[in-house]
Length: 145
Image 1 (tube, rainbow, N blue to C red):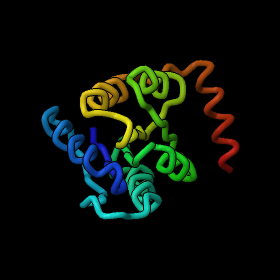
Image 2 (cartoon, rainbow, N blue to C red):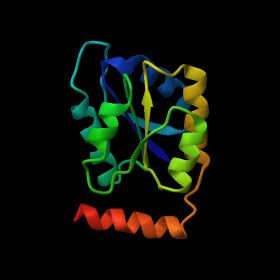
Image 3 (spheres, helix red, strand yellow):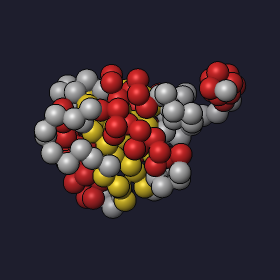
Image 4 (spheres, one colour):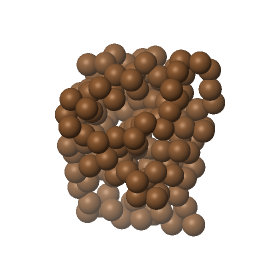
């Protein structure tokens, strides 16, 4: 499994923590930036992560900005990207089980490192249920066309 990571300046500190956490779990990742807490525009980094998934350079993405809202809005503009803002592990569970989300979005200004770790663990360990949820996702895919 490989993760593509991206953040803006407001998510930089949490992204740096996430990198260490993924390393400790033996999970491969690519850091698409930003690389400092200096102000940047979040859409750039959402696109980089979306491109990594589209080009099969990563299996999942993790995006972080201040609230997670900007990254969620941007990432979901790309075909085949299903980004879910998850502030808690339960949200991550259902994002995967019911929505087959492939990008976890977190809020750097609203989440601590322990909560982020638990949310990541849940996101990465939960499988899509399929069934009636598959039908609904196919309806969404039709909208993308």
